[in-house]
Amino acid sequence: MGVHDRLKELGIELPAPVQPVATYVRYYQTGNLLLISGTGPSAGAKPGKLGRDLTLEEGYAVARDVGINIISTINDALGGDLDRVNRVVKILGMVNSMPDFADQPKVINGCSDLMVEVFGEKGRHTRSAVGFVALPGNIAVEIEAMVELS
Amino acid sequence: MGVHDRLKELGIELPAPVQPVATYVRYYQTGNLLLISGTGPSAGAKPGKLGRDLTLEEGYAVARDVGINIISTINDALGGDLDRVNRVVKILGMVNSMPDFADQPKVINGCSDLMVEVFGEKGRHTRSAVGFVALPGNIAVEIEAMVELS
Amino acid sequence: MGVHDRLKELGIELPAPVQPVATYVRYYQTGNLLLISGTGPSAGAKPGKLGRDLTLEEGYAVARDVGINIISTINDALGGDLDRVNRVVKILGMVNSMPDFADQPKVINGCSDLMVEVFGEKGRHTRSAVGFVALPGNIAVEIEAMVELS
Image 1 (cartoon, one colour):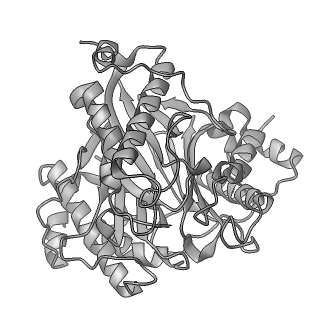
Image 2 (cartoon, chains in turn red, purple, cyan; image 1 turned 90 degrees about the horizontal axis):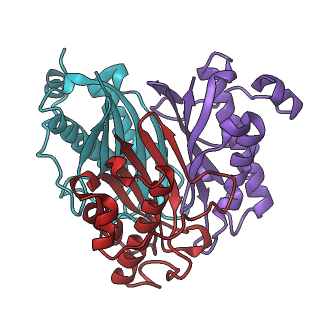
């Protein structure tokens, strides 16, 4: 089954790719590696810090939303051919955190689980999931990614 | 126009490359990718946290200064031949931040804008620009970079 | 001298590789680059934040312990053949930090020094060593790595 069919099966509709808010590009391909800039959630997502403003479940949902935006960017970079994704190599999961919040992995699972749901084994990646004192615009989660293309 | 001519036109003089403060190297080339260690500003730069100690304009200036130090390191790595830079692939912009500071992208633009001024389209990169609770020696900005060589 | 002999000489016994605590993989090889997920210390390591809960010496020891876990993962990825490590390319040293703690490089040296002790010149890497407001499970240090294979 192709990745777009899989997305349909999961009921996921890719939004228009997020536009950069400053002097940078959303993605760049070097060799067979596609690098995706730090990506935030959709406009309506709940902002704030984990450990104070969002529950774990809300954080997980934001991370999943970020993951959908990343897939939208990959789709845009590949001219719609998501089947060229050979492997999600790595993500850096950045969680807007209070100093005593220590469940960053459970939050970023919202993105990691999505990648496996959508890409299967090709979606299993290396990662770090860690706490940042502040993120742009007070978003709860930002994630950057590296993808291997076939 | 070569990159060194462009630097002259911009009135930028490259300082001596920043030396590591510990057990690491400033750069390493693997394949055609040049990786640059996390780089700080020059000795005289204003230290401290954005959202308390530096204005946005001061933060932007520090990020630009960091960018000049990164170009100096690239220049050193390439034996002076900056025209071998085919693309600035990625930067990680680390901003020493108070918990309620949310304008990291505007700070890191100081480096991103510089890269485009100096390298043109080859300077346009992917990036994350996010908030760190503390940076070495209380510097305001630290940036690491990945550059594609021709 | 092979790397395993060097480890024996240093009195380092590799522990069983750390297992992921969530939906991700510990390592992935793309081309000749081996990427290692963010890795924490062993179970008994002192948790908490630098600048409050751990001294510099204790932080250094935790970073060294993390480094041993990373080498254990590399060893696992290479089926025991650590001599295939051509270079430790890069590490990202993440230090659980109080806002006024500014000695992240001295902490991460615990890992960087180890890499040079174990791999010699091949262990010298690029890096960033910076402060995070919170890390998973309140560990004091987390490190991710990129290794070039021969």
